[in-house]
Image 1 (cartoon, one colour):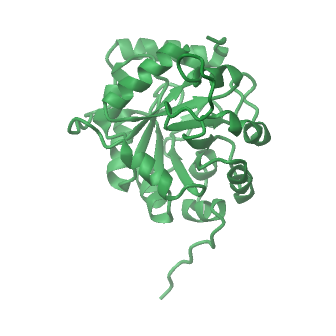
Image 2: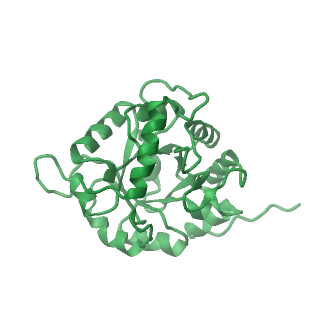
Image 3: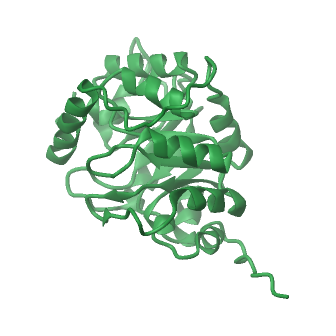
Amino acid sequence: MSEVPDILRRICEQRRRRVASGDAGASPARRLPAGAPGHRFLDAVSARRGRAVIAEIKMGSPKLGDLRGRFDPVARAVAYADAGAACLSVVVEPDHFHGGYDLLAECAAASGLPAVAKDFVVSDVQLAWARDAGACAVLLIAALYDAAELRRLAGLARGFGLVPLIETHDDADFEKLRPVGGGGEEGSSDWELVGINNRDLRTFEVDLERSADRVGRLPFSALKVAESGIHTGADVARLRRAGFDAFLIGERLVLSGDPAAALAELLGRPAPQEVTS
């Protein structure tokens, strides 16, 4: 397992303490029938392959600070759906990103979009919390696990009806996606949804070109997601040409005063016109 960056380690240590206390950040969690419809997330991305935006709700970050009170997250999720987002991403980590599983439950229910729970998964119970809150997918950050543990968590997520979105950052992460037995074929079907985070976890610098150059390292059959640092329609177009199928976009949409117009610009569409009497 590659060395985990200090900031990621600190977040995970705090996450372990909170999870050990049984704090799901949900009041109450919404228990769904067994077998949450994870296929909805894959279907939504596949239907708009190359133009699928996974629009994010986050109530803050170490970079942005506390955004609570700056916008209504439920109304923002509905606006994303109305503007043509394929899926929703909700950051549920509470201490550094001010999220919670209750936030996910409310945004997913109101918008009707299939949602991915973005958490720092340090315990199996977080997968159950994601399912109970109504998620269709769950983020697994490859840097946190060795290859065997990554596969175990992905299998457990699937057992809960969740699609695992595997986030990669570097060559060590790509190696964890190689087929068991060392076959080395990039076309392995072991993974259905894999992303590259454009932000370096050690320096927090964003480099879209670095990710674009590495997309060929991802499993051929997987849907490929570009994450972080995507701000313009030109960014989306560049990443689409490189081979990405979907684009997880947070800061650009969260900070926008007009998320519908921002989403239109990212997708290269005309901005929606206000209706006047």
